[in-house]
Image 1: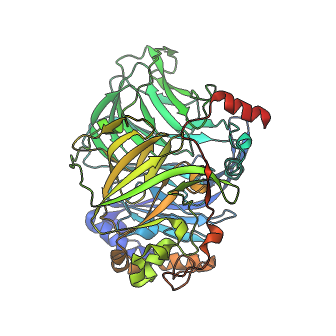
Image 2: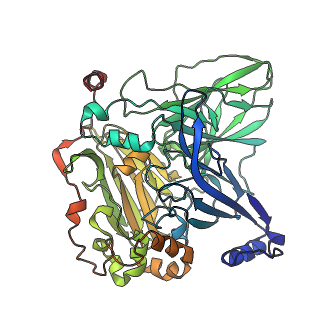
Image 3: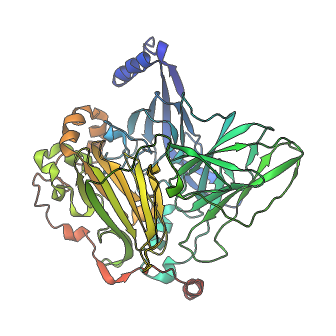
Length: 570
């Protein structure tokens, strides 16, 4: 990593032409250039002697070291792909306003980085908060291509003495392609066989992580769930948490004894250390999923040590309560009033066996399939036809958004298990959540200034109403952040202000971007299939499996006995 101080950055004689403008702007702002050269490659990772498997690491390391910068800095990542397939990097939670081509969603906003190819991501850090970087190609996130991104605020609102960055990760014995094959199987005897992950906490095997505390000091602990599928519930015995941030959004302080972070979510808590070094204490990072309704696996209890003294004894203060904070009880510090909707998009999330005899997920009976031309390139090259959803292909499930409209997303989760839904390019207000199965339709609504975040967990048989302003022209995915559910089709596309995309972004696309497309034989113009016609995309039905109506999953979970039966019979 190289940090180039802005006031002397132009003195270098080895400045790449593509970076010259960025460096000049940084000099004016007296910011810094945070530059990384990443070789993305396979690494053998030994899980504390229990098993060794391939992980996707950076420069021979896994877990991957985190990235730290300040608001106003410019982050530059030169990513070289040494894998046996394409790859990409998505900076989760960053808006990429005006730089949609750096969002990193393969075959959506870019073609991906080809084998032995390189792509340079240049990201102006206009936000502060807790974020992360991960692959957005197939299930590479589950195989380890993920790390934290912390952007510090020079004008921090809350006071604290030090901070601890604590990524929380699930890790499986099997590579993602093996698990996908299991989850894709139409036979429930195979699909419901339990998978039991291990936990990695702060880059260390679970139960071995130690948080160093000094008496009386206040710490900001940044929690990031950068795993593939399981929720984490974080708590600290004998200590109180004060929640101050969710998904990069600062909120009014909320006292709690525990915080749950779903896959893709982040949270910051303030913790004031006790005024003694007599004892050490225990913190919990318990993994949970409602996909497996078996007590043996839910939760999976993992702990670490709050260390005041290397020689101190552990003092246990157990609590039977698994406390949490409801999103609808939180308020952002900017106190933005509740938005009024101009446009409503309703998404019904189902899963079931489709006509190709595979188990898939879908929004509105459409299971996502990648187009042959990245959706952003279709929006950039189809002129006035870019305003028509047909041009993007049926299976991208595209919705066109008008510039500056307030968009309301109504998400109905008809599955029996939770989904953490993530929106690229925006944060949304969480307006309302409730139960879609109850005749009384139990509902909870937000405060007059609703919390904003980019990832929300919607329980099985529940719904949520989300709102955001379409003020960031670009192509943005909305998807479940369980890596395996993405692969099984639970995502859709917003194309926001196509005319603005063409006028604001078209001439900014770097040449390296198009070169990577050509290197893979991917077309850079035309509709979803690479043609010039807005309506006739040929026979899309050959890649459009339709669900059998009677084979959708029930909104009620299978019982533990049913799961045991599936396992024993399988």
